[in-house]
Image 1 (cartoon, one colour):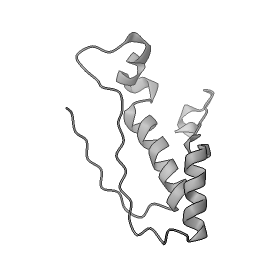
Image 2: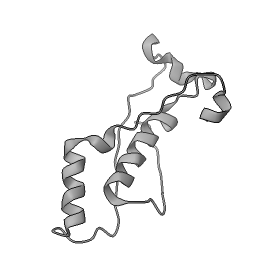
Image 3: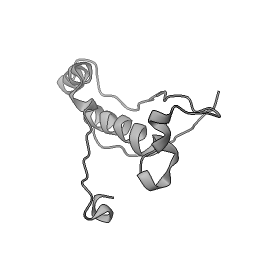
Length: 98
C-alpha cells in the first residue's frame, strides 16, 4: 500500500504490542509458566456504524482514503495477536451486526 501511494506521506503505527498488559502476557507465555497455548480466540469490538456517522470518522466510508475498519482495527488486532503468540497460521473471521 505504501508503494502504491508513491509520493504521499505514509505512516504505519501498530502500537498495541507495546501495551504493558500484552507485554506481561507475552512474558508469562514465553516463560512457560502457563503452558503452551494451542489456540486463541479474539473477540474485538469496533464502533457502530449506523445510518449516520459522525463527520469526524466519515473518511472510513471512502475507498479513496484507504482506511476502513478492516485496514485499521483488524490490522491492529492481528498485530497484537502475533506479538503475543507468534505468527498466525490460520484465521477464521466472522462479523456480526447487532
